[in-house]
Image (cartoon, rainbow, N blue to C red; front, side, top):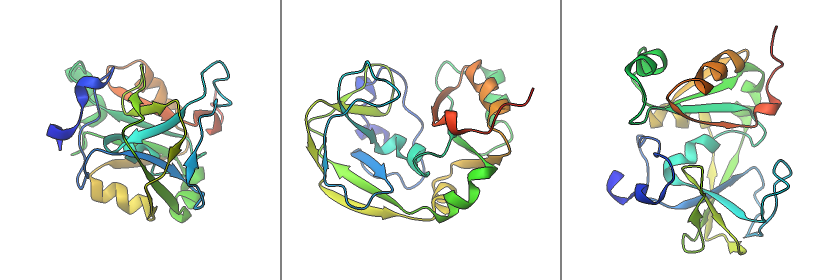
Length: 195
C-alpha cells in the first residue's frame, strides 16, 4: 500500500501501514448514521481557524476507531525516532503502531457502532501541520457509508496494539517528550492527573 500513499504531500511522516489497509481514500467517522453533506465549520476548540471540512486518510483512519469523545493516544515510529525510543515504546511488541485508551471508556468502546463516510478526494488538501488529516474549504457530499463495529477486534486484526490503562497521562507525558510520532484525541476527557 505504500506505493499509492501520497507521502510527498504531507508535512510530516505518515504512520506505518496496517494489516488489511485498503486503498488511499478520504474518510469521516461518526456515531451519527444520518450524515450526507459535510459543511465547513469552525471547531469549538479552535475558534480562530477558518471553517473547514475535515477528513482522515485510510492510513490514519484507525485513530478514529473509537467513540468520538473517547480520549486516546496513538503513536508510531518515524525515521527520526531514536533507537532508545524505539525500544522504549515498541521493544516489547510486534507492532509499529500503538493506541492507548483509558479503562473508564472500555464499555463504550466495546459497544460503539461507528459509521465511516467515504468522501471524494478531489476537494481535499493535506492539512499544513498534521499528517493524515485533510481539509476542504467547500461543502462535501458523502459517496457512501459503511458500518464499523467491534473496534477492539478491528485493532487486533490490523496488528495495532490497543492498550487499556487507568490513566493515559503517564504514557502521554513520555510520548510528548520522545521522538515517536503521535496523535492525541480528546485528551481533555481523560481521567484527572494524580499528583
